[in-house]
Image: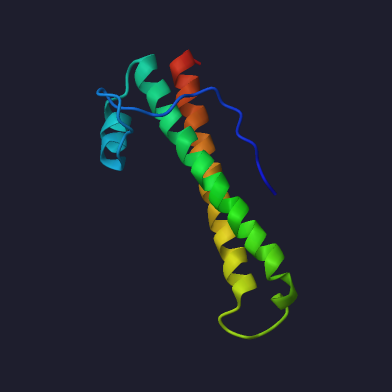
Length: 110
């Protein structure tokens, strides 16, 4: 399952043009008031979603590669590990997309 993210956001950047750090994101979340602040956060979360989507695709490819081991009880089982990683990435992807959409709505005043 590969989800396509079709958002027109650029890279999330701080005041000097460099990408936001997690610490800066926490501060920006607390201080976001203007549409530009929310768009910057939406861009950050969209960038995180794109990276997570790439990680998810890799985990799903690993699942396909190790599918023959799905029913084996050998531990560690590479199929089970890939399936667990894919589930984690799906949850993260959903979280990042929800946060990006929420900030986009706030920026648009909805």
